[in-house]
Image (tube, rainbow, N blue to C red; front, top):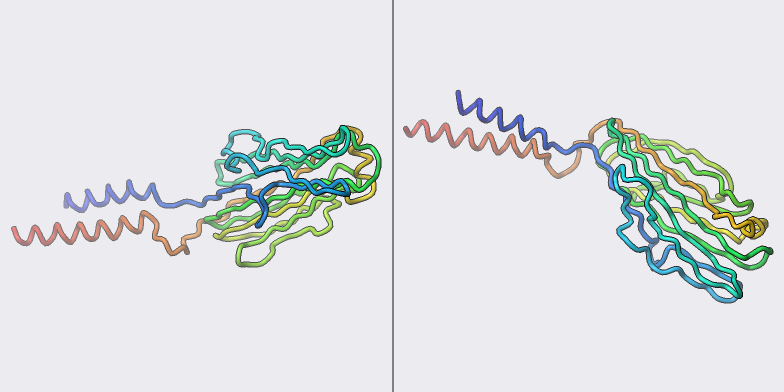
Length: 248
């Protein structure tokens, strides 16, 4: 009897370690890229260098410069800039909120011309569980600027996309365990009006946020949960103890 009670106590303790629904998030460079953006002055294409740091926003840790401010010079005092800020909030109800503000702008460029600056990367999410999702894509704050995006499952379908990038969008849906990517490209200078606004010394920011609403756990993975392993282990212990007692 004492052996049974011991096994039950151990199982109760180990059950606390059963895997719960989780979401990891890391900002990465697009395949084949070595930097988060490009600048073009009509003659030369320049890049901004690689993203520094891990690209992982801390849970409930406030806003971080996930792409630190970087700039490259054009002729005279003209410069092109890119950066991105991010924040992650993990709520007590297992909901996860990811906030991203991207910047793609110029300084000292006040006339329409051939100048262009692009800020581009993607979030990669490892999801364990069933969630509802909602994307909040803000309209670009520069008239003529564009911020396109595509949300897709790796090896699966595209869940939402905006190939124009000139207005606000708020697509929604649901997903299960898997790997998902949210690509974005924030461009300033390709479209009439964007350079004129850049001359106001604004930062050209726009928000691309995604919210995950917990629905249920997902135990369909091939890796057994710690609780399942504990059950098999305790069955083995129980059998060994029973055999030992018979020998006595």
